[in-house]
Image: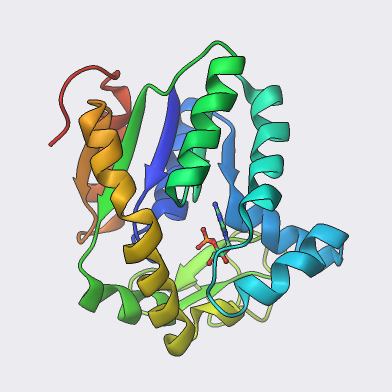
Length: 220
Ligand code: AMP
């Protein structure tokens, strides 16, 4: 499987990508996770990315393209890209990388959720600063208040870019830059549309089915 996960912020791409990656043992590459890790470590890439991420803007293409190129060269035949590409120029760059690696995408899983739902969803999101596990105050609360189910650390946090005003900016950026990719991949017959406005396990079942449909067949 060589997949791209597409969808607005808060659609559940990260959650679903992690589940699928576990189910099939496929490397999960989330550009958002890689950038957050670089920011936490204060690397030059992290410092450069921070001014964009904190405002809800896209990080310059050359920064994320380089991160993805390095990891794709290692993953090669099995990968799950989450949060990349996010605009036409990144999608062109991804096509170039795949051509050079003599491979191609098997499908693009598009998780759709209406805008009204997204701001509410994202602002309730909390994560563990230690291991990165993601929770939601209403739909996926931790078993013990404010503690991580996965590693037991105390003190779940809200990502700075999950504050309501930044989420609105991220949605604007999504509609302007990323949403056009839906048509691009539909035209290539790669798009698999999944309704993301349902419980996590119901979405996961459809994502799993969608991921197994190899490219070629027309998308929804
Ligand atoms: P995410 O965790 O995918 O929602 O990404 C969080 C933030 O990281 C985004 O709002 C962007 O600022 C940045 N980011 C992640 N992926 C990309 C990308 N492919 N291109 C540009 N910026 C990105």
